[in-house]
Image (cartoon, rainbow, N blue to C red; front, top):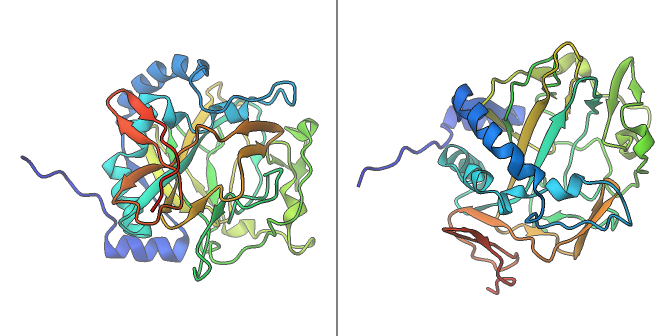
Length: 317
């Protein structure tokens, strides 16, 4: 049997990642291949009957949560998050035993605002319960999650590509225990220093430790990516995105998979999601093991089968 190619980061790449907080972009799909995958994917995304989150529309008309974690019901996305090009590189950062705990789509349409500068450590910032969504062991030096952001379409400055401030991932400028007020009317209506920037109905400035602090945008880099490439970064890295200028009618679509070592507890205090104005049960949620094994038994996992995923009860270890 032919030995498969291993895609672990080199020592030089690891040093760069630990210095800057991000690495990439890396090629995953050819442009035409990604476009064909996207065209086949669109009708599946519109059909949310098998999506694991069923929102209470009487509570909110927000449909964002219905498109969380679609890797659990869409075969292409299930394969995508476990691709060795991704899993090997993530595991070279986090260690041999890694899991994908979340995935999200990030569309940006012509005229849409940019995403404001932000960092995420435990992801309690938009959770209605205010409990951390991920919990590292007490003796950990660091928190956050690894995000693998794939350009399902071209990502340019004109249509709203990502921005990073290198080296900002080791110090949090925001207090996630503070409360942000959700206001759907704030979407596409906030102005930050002459630039349309918001955070999906929140004002991220409400979490600043120092209300007078401003990110040093002079150090920001724009992460232009061709269709089919991906980039890896810490969620604690200061990151944002440009507004969609409207100079092109092409939607920008990114897909983010989020990864952790298996000793991190996921949704340790929550039975449901409550964020971005929506609510959903976690009854069918499960992490996906992408490399190694789970030696802790802290988390619930889904098992990959020929026909997709099945949902077991919480593992005991």
